[in-house]
Length: 340
Image 1 (cartoon, rainbow, N blue to C red):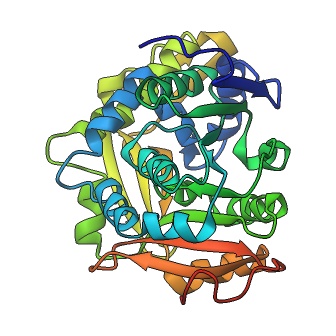
Image 2 (cartoon, rainbow, N blue to C red):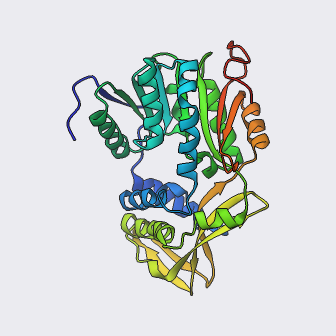
C-alpha cells in the first residue's frame, strides 16, 4: 500500500475522542448495573472482531451484505446520473464492495471524486482511506473523525452529496437514538442531496436467527470476542469459555438480540475499574440489538425526522431495503427520483 500524494487524503478531527478504555469503563459501569446486563455493540469490533465480521458477511446464512450489494448494483448508476453528486459522505468508513460501487458510479458519471467518511476510529478511517486511494488514483478522501450520531452537521461540504448509511447499521440503534440520528441527517442536507439508507426487513425467524447464529460458529466466536476485549482493556479475568452465544428473536420489539449466556455461575473481576462481576447460571449479557423494519414503518420514521422517501428498493424476496430520501422542505421536484 503506497502513501497517497499530498492533497489526496485529509483528516479533520471534529471531536476529541476519549480513549477506548475510558469509554468502555463507563459503559461497563452503566451496563452491568442493569438487568439484563448490556454493552454497546461497538466493542465487538476490535481488530480480531472486525476480521471475524468480514468472515461472517461471506457465510451462507448471512444474507444482508450480499443482498444489499445486489440491490445497489441494480440501481446505483441511475441514481448517480440523476443526482450528480460531487461527494459521497459515509457514516462510518468503508472500503467494502458497496462503498466502491458508489464511488465507481460517481467516477463513471464524471460527477465527483470526493469521498467523505465520518468515523470514530482513526485507525479504521486511515486504513479504509489508504486502501481506497491505493486502488483509485482519481479519488480524494476528506475524512472526519467524530461520532456520526452527533457530528454529521459539522462535516465540511464541497457540493451536492449522497449521504450513505448502509449495512442496516441503523438497526443497532433503538428508536430514540434512531430519531435523533435521522434528524441530524435532515439538518445536514441541502436541496439536491439524498440520503441512502440500508435497512434489513422483518422476515421469518427461520431466516433471521441463523444469520446471527451460523452453523460454523463464526458468529459465536465474534460475540465471545467482546469478553476478550473486556479482559484486555480493563485488566479482567472473565472466563470467556464459560459463556455461550445465543441469538434471540424478540418478536415484540422486531429485533434480533445477541446474548452471551453464562453456562454456570461466573465470577470475575475487572481490576482497572475495581469491579467484581457475577453472572448467575443462565444470565445473559446483551451485546447487540439488530432491529428489523417494515417499509411503511421506516418511511414514517424518516418523515417524522423531516426526510421524504423518494424511492425504496428491495430484492425479489423483500428481505432487505435501500431507501432514497431527501429533506422534506427540499426545493427538488417531487418526482425527481422516481416513484416509491
